[in-house]
Every structure is written in structure tokens, then in C-alpha cells.
Image (tube, rainbow, N blue to C red; front, side):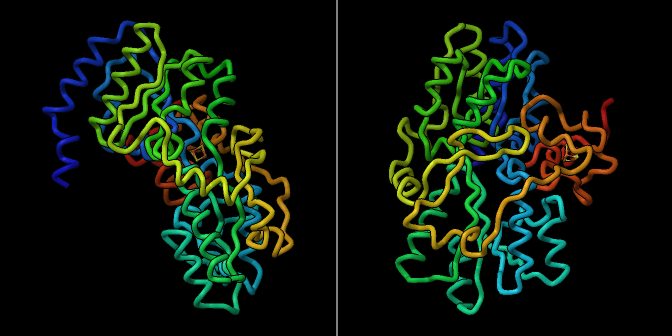
Length: 365
Ligand code: SF4
């Protein structure tokens, strides 16, 4: 806690805020693409500290939020099988697909257990060899190594009643797609700290070089985020976009090469559908053929069927940075954290949930 205090102290943050205001010479639009950044920005009131000319947009950085309804439906179809136990991260269970959520399936008798890591799901499979334990493998590069490690462990231990539905996504391809959106018009990118710890800060060089986008890798404490924003404002002012790593205590230029190798050993890149962004080439991770016996879609004979997103929900536009949550007609009325309509209101890292929790239910027309 003492360590975190140093990054929250006004002695450290106030000069950064002053310097951001002093350095800003024109209005700028900055996107953060990490749900943990979104929550930290709201929790610490960082928006209220910034000068008016800075617009912060949230991008597709919440893994639950970018998982489309058709994948949720596939998890539901698995849950409805009497021999299957779903072992899932807690924030997924309330996310609605087109036929309801895993929480609703559980209330109808499906076996849905909350776990804190894929290894917990493997332990469950070992304990209950008569059941098939399925882990819905959602997440980004941050989660993929632990899922890969779990598959390798299942292979080592000869556990055959553990499967996943591979739905992990990779961030650079999604950013590439976002940057081709002419309506987005962002000047700078607050690069995700967790993902960057795995892929390394060099992964953003193409965005600075090819798209002339200022990039700063930042951690999650107020001083980290403000230092990242200051770096971006300075880069934008100077007209010299680059990649600055402001989170050197966790992120290196090359990233975690051991984790990268583990991902590459178990998974192969594939096209993947993102809520709001459509299918993005090479942005997903599927099991390599050697590990297909751990593929729940194959083992349970499931398929992904096209599904309707929740009616009236604007999560797609919010994940693309085109809308702010209060601009959704359902925000704070039909959609609240207690009765969420879309995933961005369900997840603890969702933008709508962050807005509601820290700014209240008022809707803007
Ligand atoms: Fe979807 Fe609710 Fe957010 Fe609207 S407020 S975009 S319905 S999650």
C-alpha cells in the first residue's frame, strides 16, 4: 500500500497535471484501450483534473465487452449440457447473449462455477473426472499465457475432461482496424499496461511510424496515467509521434518472450469477431492442431451461430470510441449495473459501468 501511495500522492500528481495544462496547445483526443485504465481514470477522478482541451475516449480494452453475443451463446449451449461444468471468470456470467446469460442458465440448474484462473478450472476437472469442465477462454495477450500454460499442464497430467472455447483476442490487430476508422480521429494512444507487459512497447512502433500516432505505455496508478498523458501531449505538440514507455517497472521493449513463446506453442492466429468492430483478420487465438482435443467446440459438437446483439444497446459504438455511455438511450434507465442490457455495463472494466459508478445515471440527449 505504501508503494501505491507514492503514485497517488498530490506531491507527485499535481506537478504532472500542471505540466499537462502548460504543454497543451490545441484540443487533443486520446484513447485508452485497457479496461483497467478506464476504471482507474474514473476511480481517481483524473478526467476532472485535466484541462478542457483533452478528450479521453475508451476503446475496446475490456475482454468481456468485446466478446460478441454469438460466443456467449456458444458458452450457454455448453452450459445447457448436463455433463458439462462451466468454470468461468466472474464478470462473464452476467453478460447477455441472445438467449440470456450464464447466470440465468445457472438459475435453471446448469453447473456454472466461478474461478479465478484457468488453473482453478483444471483442478476442478481433476476433482470431477466424470464431468467435462469447460473454461470460456476470453481475454487478451495478458490472459492467453495462463490459458496456454493450463493446456500444457492438462496435457502433462493426461487430463482429458478439461476443454476451452478459444476466444482470446490480440490487441495490435484491433488497433490497426480502429485507426482506419475516419470518424475516430484520435491523436494519441494510452497503450495498455498489462498487454504491453506481454507484447512489449515495440509492438506499437508501427502505429507511431505508419499512422503518425503518439503512443505512451502507462501503468495504472494516477501518477502513471498522468505521466502517460503528459508524454502524449508533448509528442502531439512537437508533431513527433513515437512510442514512449512510461511503465518501465513492468514493461520492456520486447515484452515477456517466455509468455509469447507459450502463446505461440499452444495457439495459432486466426480471424476473430469483435463486438462492435466486426471480424478482424488475425486478431484471435485458436488451438493448434496438436491441442485440438482440448477444444470444447469440437469435443461437444458446438458451433457458433450468428446472434443478435441486445436490442438498443450501443456497446459497439462505445467500444469504437464513437459514443460516450450517457449518449446511449438505455443508459441509466433500461440499463443499469443491477439490470445490465449490454456487456459494457456488466463488466467491472466496462466503460458504461465506470461511467455509472463514478458519474451517476444521468443520460445525455
Ligand atoms: Fe449497452 Fe447499456 Fe452501455 Fe447502452 S448503457 S451501450 S445498453 S451497456
